[in-house]
Length: 165
Ligand SMILES: Cc1cc2nc3c(=O)[nH]c(=O)nc-3n(C[C@H](O)[C@H](O)[C@H](O)COP(=O)(O)O)c2cc1C
Image 1: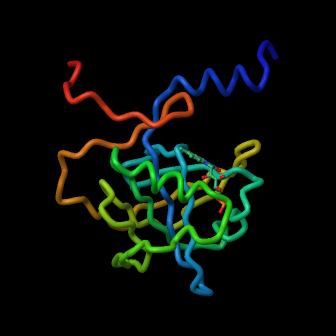
Image 2 (image 1 turned 60 degrees about the vertical axis):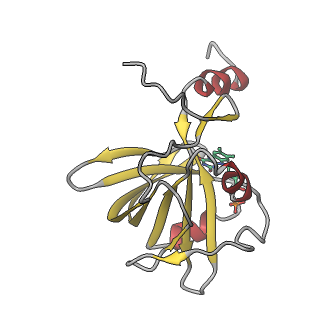
């Protein structure tokens, strides 16, 4: 290899992403929530999306067992939600008034869009596990002109108000 881990991370960091919080209620009634930037679309028919979870994430075993979960896309003013669900601690859900979607997944308040999903496939992704998910329902914010939270080079950004093309 011609590069080290740091150089690889830095190179990937140039690529901006949105930020999602994946949420679920386990069969035992426990609420799970985890911030991720490794989100992308996979297929239109069937409607598939993907994210990946680090093999050392404390909650990975629980995510594997979840049949359904919601992918909540954060708006630019929701960096605090991203930080909260990126903590490896309990109390992630304190004071959060989530509502249940039509497939029973917990939807975070005031996100840009929430996708209710069912687990479709899981694949080896090196030190991550790739979760492919089939989208079951879409819940859009009524305020569609809002901007997404953007993550790039380890920091949060908001989009400029002007389109460049
Ligand atoms: C902006 C941002 C993006 C992240 N993206 C991912 C990701 O795509 N996959 C992942 O495994 N962890 C990601 N993390 C880290 C997890 O959110 C963090 O490790 C979290 O504590 C895991 O939850 P758990 O400890 O309950 O398992 C991200 C963190 C931040 C702040």
